[in-house]
Length: 111
Length: 119
Image (cartoon, rainbow over all chains, first blue to last red; front, side, top):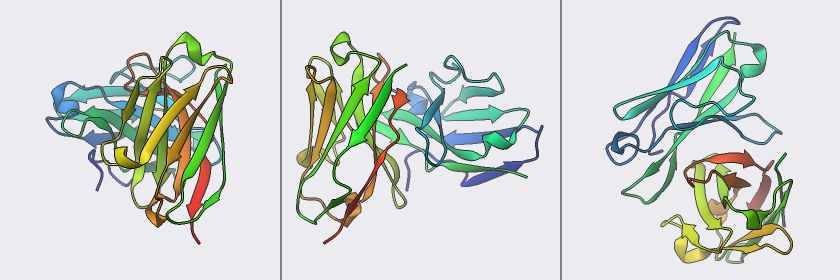
């Protein structure tokens, strides 16, 4: 049982938009700790997509965007491409557990 | 470009100690930033294990703290993880990573190394 809750899977056709939610609590995202997002592809190093809820590292396409509201963070991918098929994980810090916490991951399937 | 490479045994026996090293290239550990270990297992997903600052300050996941040691060797530009008294539950892909200056997220990760605990 992950501290942050994500849907196990989402899907979309090329060109469409998908949003992945990440629901936390008052001791992590709701306490003001940032939501961060990573993309995991088999055989490659995990990639930071979004940090500080809304910021994209250099090199990450602007098709990827993040937001935060209350105890939840979200990752939105617009203009879906085949290469976006991957697992996506949210992450934050939890003040009660005193450690980083992750979501259970969401598998994005491109139809 | 910062690159990280994990190394260590892929198979560890139950009750023994898992030891991994992360070699860093493209950036000098002694210049700053936090450095850490994260693991991924099918049962528990991603889990943060430990973090170390270049000065040697350490931070541990409370659930693993009694079994974990993280250390840094600035002369070799690498840092290491030791996890004692392993069980099958410690079977996972272990990643090393550079953490942002805030320490709250990772901006560079290694490819990961699979460690299986089995007799």
